[in-house]
Length: 321
Length: 119
Image (tube, rainbow over all chains, first blue to last red; front, side, top):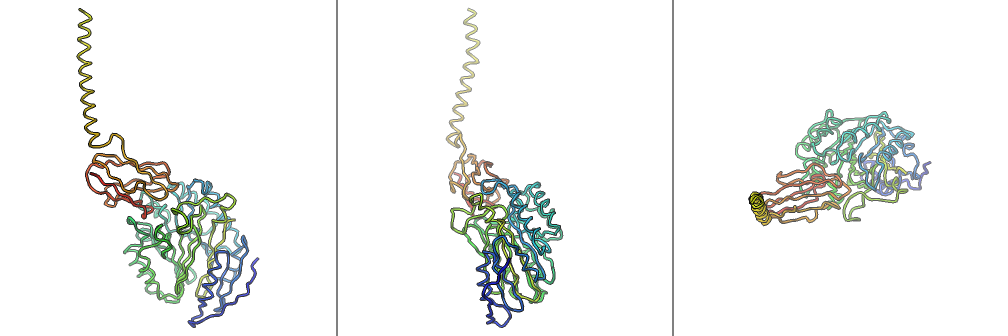
């Protein structure tokens, strides 16, 4: 059950209906399961008990979707010897939400080794949602073939390496690919063609249109030593500067991280397969083995709700166990 | 008489074989001075190539073995060589015939870099 906390934050210094200070404070709690919802220009926060249903509060929202990420189907090392089971558990959780999502976003590393049977397993399990899933590739999905198999499976109507956009209930969604043509010593990369396409794609949209961008590698620099960033994302964000609400959803780092910068909220999702260490807390960013009874607490899904007319989307992470 | 003939008949091929072996031995010693009879190993582990920089003689075969719990690739910066994706315990070998410097990286995790110097 949700219980309302004491805070009803009411700072509107910019006189634009966005309670940034309150939102920042709220986002700092969100990792523990806090729902922040804008209602009538006022930010309200609801603490969620672990294991509770994040979809309940979404009943007030107009658009609800789920981000799922880094399923790494085919991985079988000690960090998780049953990625199929934990992916099934994630989908079961989605199917159990009291407000079902309209669709799913998968932010990449669907497979572990780009093998056809790995993609097949994921597709099979996702069928039970009865919803469409929109995919962007991770670096594990484009091995050996420059992403050809990925595009054949998931890239209908996409351009270039697999980028595309679509609209739902007045929200403009943009799927970007930043895992191709990576350079030695470099970070993720969008490339000139994709950036040109993005500029053109959003050019004629009203600045009041909420934007959701989803891509695999974070579009902000989380930790460059481990390649956790995109070298040309600043250009992409420049094209989105005019919009009042931009939500960036990423994966790749297998842990939840958030950042608010002006009108842009950045969020990375947990993996459904295995956790990775926090930046700099281990010699390398490889799979992190945790006690078996704790594994599911490090994995999760993300529920996102949009209330039409409000600025910020509510982003709620929930653990698998 | 017969025995001596037999020995003589045996001796020629034996001596010939010995000469061939000796020559082959000489040959392999000579090529060992140009390239080691055993190849050079690079271990991939913990998101790094070890050793990250190696110097080898022209004609050496370098073998990369992935000991990490995550797949990696070995890709030359200048497109001279490119492995398929290597899962744990999989290997990739390349024989360097021309002297030069060959920087390479993992195309899946581009922060992982290495270098082969061929003399």
